[in-house]
Length: 482
Ligand code: ADP
Image 1 (cartoon, rainbow, N blue to C red):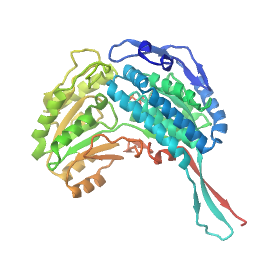
Image 2 (cartoon, helix red, strand yellow):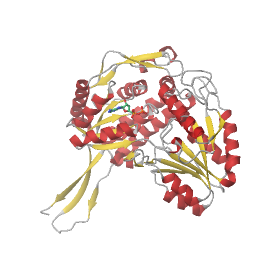
Image 3 (cartoon, rainbow, N blue to C red):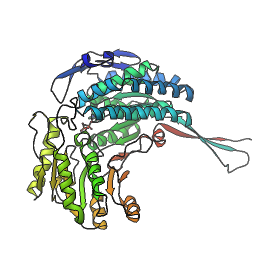
């Protein structure tokens, strides 16, 4: 990989603590498309995590005192460097994660857009004056940075999940210790190289790789850490929630989803098929907002399945760096096993295989993009997040029925529906129990809108001006004797 980068220094086999690149390369990171080793990263300990937290604590004293404009300018510089190195960043991303190169470029741009947005937002973190209740006093609310933040990110968006957490934190005046996913540390480390070049002072942004549970424990228990931001599985989110009780840490949790994708009789069918493709098969189905259950109304059901299957069957599977490939490998053998389990269970329950259905001839963790129809409401795939290229279609009769089906989940992250009836659009958007609704769109993520879930999909919002709220505390000041 190193030879194919324009700037080989971006591929860093070391961690960043207090402005120093540290650690011995140890844990092997491989390319899921080829199985080949990309490089090795250090296996840092809980003690190293404590050191990084201490560095962040020290840096907080000065970084939080920078003016908003100074912080804004430095973040802006970081954004510009991300744009300038977008091709290298995307190549690193595809190599460690597997998504097709055009998607990786999209993610790098999206990740950069968070930095740009929060560079702008840094100057607009306003407090308030409050009409007083007594004549001799004046009341104000300050918004101050919460302090040192721990961040834990997943492998499915190795670049944009990093900037979505780190840039609002830094904008607010916080400092960060980041632990990226074991499978995809190089995207995070490359962003740290650029952060350093942008002039982000030492200790403000630290990146450590190593065994996740002890590092997570340090984040949850160290007295200097005031906020822990996590994107990942609901299972690990619950562990962190429990651990965080010890130090009463504020938490941001972006956990799993089980997105319903609903197509009503009055939908623009071609648009709905297009939306389903984007929502379901982006990143080979490995996103927490991927359509997981596709409900199609009686009148358009058969036509929808036919059109979807034709598009799915035409997708090109392969190494994400090859031109024309739209589906890369899945991240691990376990991910493949889960897709197989969901398919087998649905077929056993009477579902019909329309296209795909098995491991791809390329071997490894490549899997055929799959569509199954006539799936029963009690199938595993209707209740668990698949995280793979499997589109299960379920038939429904009317609006009330499908809203009940859609809401019958312990998750509540994204939902999608296609309809052209204005009344229905309002009713359904309001009735769905989730944090994000895509109406006539399969792609909803943007830096300017709040992203987050309800129920067991998590706590808090990222992106938009709400994204800063996680990283500030409100301090009420009464000034009396006036
Ligand atoms: P996935 O199943 O998508 O890999 P995980 O929730 O296991 O999602 O991983 C998301 C992130 O959480 C990764 O960075 C991983 O290393 C980290 N992680 C896993 N287990 C723990 C834990 N016990 N404490 C803290 N972080 C963890």
